[in-house]
Image (cartoon, rainbow, N blue to C red):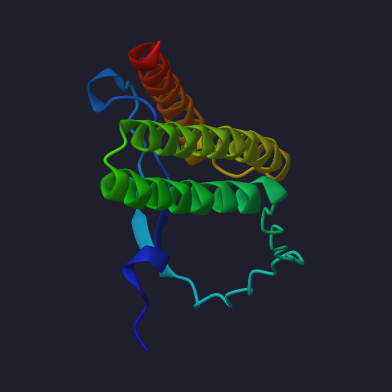
Amino acid sequence: MEPDEQQTQFWGQVDHQPPSTQINPSPNPVLIQQQVQPASVVQPIQQQGVVYIQVPKFKHPTRIASSILIGSGFVIYLISLAIGISGDSELFLALGGGTCCLAFNAAFICEIIFYTKMLEHNKTYGESNGWAIANIVFGSILTMVGLLYIVGIVMQFV
């Protein structure tokens, strides 16, 4: 069995003075011999006991509330649309749109609360907070747009 190149070592004496400054050169020149060491036994790496713990999934009741609010907003809007079209009444259309918008704003506020609690949960368990922060910002923007829409509807009938 031939030794690996990595296990080959050179042994010998080294003369520390440069040859031009030597007064008495040594009678024995530097002798370098190659010595081969037998293959060493590889010790297995012992891992410490690592236990993987699954982080509990985040759940909060505001998510259910926001889903109910969005669904009821759509239903109210569709009912007011049907009544407004059949009766040619702009008032029903405006009330349906305003009520739907209020329901959506309430749902956005519930989502902001949900993602704020999720942010706290992620900080506790060391998870990423990027999406929670992005959703809080996005929900806040949509809530402001919804409030401006409601103000526009109210100003139209005043």
